[in-house]
Image 1: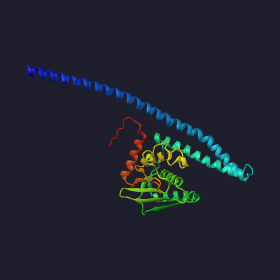
Image 2: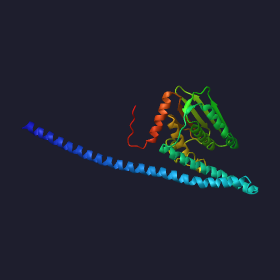
Image 3: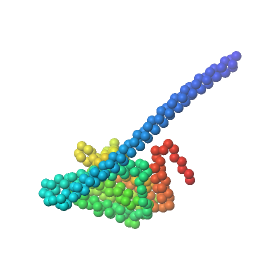
Image 4: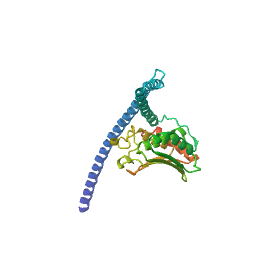
Length: 300
């Protein structure tokens, strides 16, 4: 009788446990359904956002081009003589047109990168000339701000497999931002050297640095760097998102090292050109195209 009573007790506990497990499973299934619905809505909203940005950017481009052409025509004096005040105001107008054009181009670049429509033209590439071109193009800007801009490139630098124009854009944005965030009398240096499997490029400045709060989210879209209270924030923050996605498409990595009030160091790593680096870059670009998919299958 005691054994029978013990068996009945065990069966009761098992039934209770099974009932609890069933309830928990039903709750998990309900939660999974809710999360799935929420994720689908988020994907829809993200797609709507991307489509909206792309449409607005294209709509802005045409009138902006017309305004720029008219302003440059007036500035050239072909529509009549202009006095000093008019020339000063036209300089302000053209400078802000350039800024607005840059914002529109950033929007379009992000939209294309997110949709996987960005065309990359890859080839074996020496980053040394790319870095020197960036230094040459931005030296006048540095001189106008009383900043020292220089480059230290180890030779020979291993070749990488990349898109010269896209990588040049990333480096220009990094250096331009460093110049903007560095006070007069400061220094911005670009360093490049080869490692066993990669090429490392550093953009080092003596500016305001990056806060700990910004460090973890600095490569997200629409995040500004710098301190907006002192006028050191830069645009929409999209340029770092563009840089991040561009470097990822090359199979590389980009990050920032924090040293608040002592400047910042942006580091870019690109794999040395090899059959494997070419394959990994191609695979990364395919993942970028389908990164919002619920499931991605890879056949090797």
